[in-house]
Length: 500
Image (cartoon, rainbow, N blue to C red; front, side, top):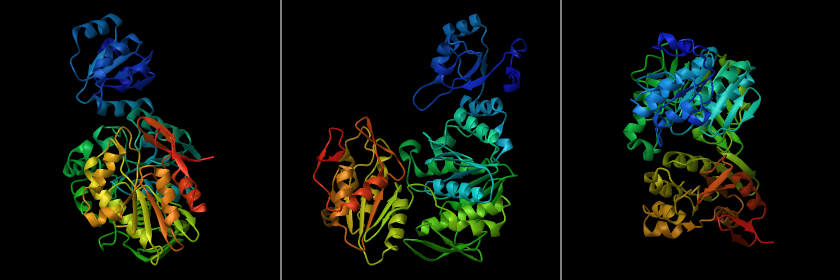
């Protein structure tokens, strides 16, 4: 593609420069690359312009004035430096153009919010697949392109990778893409260049304040995504969330609500539920679903309402609902014998409270045993509230949950900090997560529920800089099959394994 087709204000003598790809990593800036120097959270791309030029890049986009030596190198190599107001935003736009503007060839729906994003996006993908439509999914739990599965390192991928994924979906004859849109992605302009046909807001809870600073700043970033939607799109918000109405107050998009409230397009209500599924009334129809928990009834209502806004036949959508499985690691029933075992990703105070309430209703006569912790190197201001939520269980067990570089003892102390002496006395602390799960299985009796929170679908545990393979569902299943367990010892990395 000619440089002039990608970006305006190209000097006449440089308009015909051929560009094959757009990159933001100077290590990828070889021949034919357009290098975009943007400021990231850790490094400033302007510091790597010289490296990109020496690697043979075709052109450079940035904002800042460059040092004299770098300017001389650009001139010597005949590489144009094109200055723009916001390189991060320009990166997404350029990546879209070099890939043929793929989002214009898809119906793209973004889901934002603290809790429920993954489930709503996954349910939409499953619904449209059940309706016979080829669609893509970009979610925390992975990427789906029609029938192909791929891992996902970022919930919302960086701009260049995101545009490539959308282009791959187009080549795979997908018509729809359902994707999670995180606050980090909005703030860092990862979604620049994506033409959204719809946006969904689920909930806002205390999370990511290590990045955003305040809940107000966090909400403002979420709102920015919905406000930017065009008039041709829809903006669907949760009327049951205190932030729901404000999120769509200034958008030009077609506004609709889901929730229990009468203003919802298809008001929902929970009729009954147990450990095998839930019966929900959505609009005038009663729907049976495999999904567990009241919060998942809300997520299902969001997906059904969004599908109707996309023009899907509501009768066919509701007929497909009983087949939906939800997202991996979200209210995942691992065992349904004498002891019910459930794994869930909940890692905010609100999501924990919702999951605990939902799980209690599954076996009302039994005890609730909860194993959970808080991640290291992340928002520490929510830890006391999360500890308080877990401590409402009949048997709370505090343990490690991806401590990363932090001391897990210190993390747990913060979780305990909001509890009184009597509450503290009820908490079992077992920092080795495998031992914590084995303890929960050992004390469980028929009719009880063992709930593991925080890890969900994740396949690793990071401790002191070392990543270990981890399967939460497998660990719980094994522990419940041998409820009295075996002696264990702890490896240097803090994991445990059976003695032989």
